Length: 355
Ligand code: NAD
Image 1 (cartoon, rainbow, N blue to C red):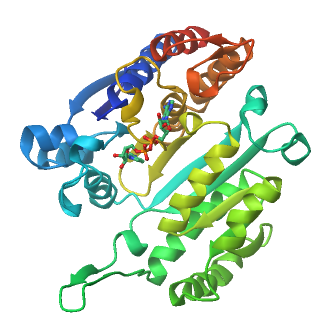
Image 2 (cartoon, rainbow, N blue to C red):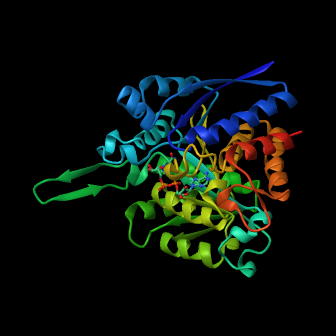
């Protein structure tokens, strides 16, 4: 029996609701494979602040370091909004990414053909479907650079820092992924203004020489934000720095109908972390309303990237597709004529489609 140790961090808000459904799916995978999943639950985010006074307790990080993979729901909520920056729940995310060395964040933005009505763009722009892979740098840039306040002149500053090694390794991840897709990479930056972006361009030109079969172009981030709406089909793989990737992937999520549909994988270290891209959605927490699909698709990414279980990953993705084709919808992706279901029902339905 092949055993995988998975650390489960439910987090806050809808975190426990959606993570429970991803566990259902993994239990189903156990039935159709020779793999056994061992789950250990740890705290991070607001719940950890309440219990231990820290958003990322040392024992959570230590357990993650030893695990084969980590599943994370979401962290944060209004209860902790007034805490100082380094004590907020979101600090746990940065601590996990930094602590596990997860520098590469893969965010596929896929519009399922069944959800075309939920996409705000016109039919002639999106065609039948959309499939963009956003590769976001995750452990450097302005989110990790030096920051501070100056009382004397009542100012504050954040620093966007990158070194060549950090840029090169994320570019390699993006170029490699493009080889199994349409061999088209767009590097998004702000090289007309930022020195760090000009370094990104220099390193890209060097890295691109090793991938002559990949078409590579650059876009300024403001133009990229516009092009994602004007003509999203021009993109295949987008590679970009931390903050630009954060913003563009949320924008891309709207093209797919709901933020509740988008999974992510954070890779680069000894093990990897899988989480939906959305937050803790406090407005619908504990009400059986959250869409668990982003988390379930994150599980598919875990099977693929951490465990080499491509066949099972595809079974999970096909099960999601089958549930959508059969007309099941949570509130966020509901449209007239479809069958409205809750979080738990959607989890059951998807798990049942896995054969
Ligand atoms: P959010 O993503 O939590 O919610 C935005 C909107 O989308 C809300 O209306 C919410 O109900 C809806 N939504 C989100 N996920 C959904 C799902 N699975 N199904 C159905 N609807 C869904 O963003 P926010 O409101 O800006 O942030 C709420 C909290 O989450 C904040 O504390 C924020 O800091 C935190 N946050 C955490 C993460 C993370 O843990 N990775 C990411 C983003 C925000």
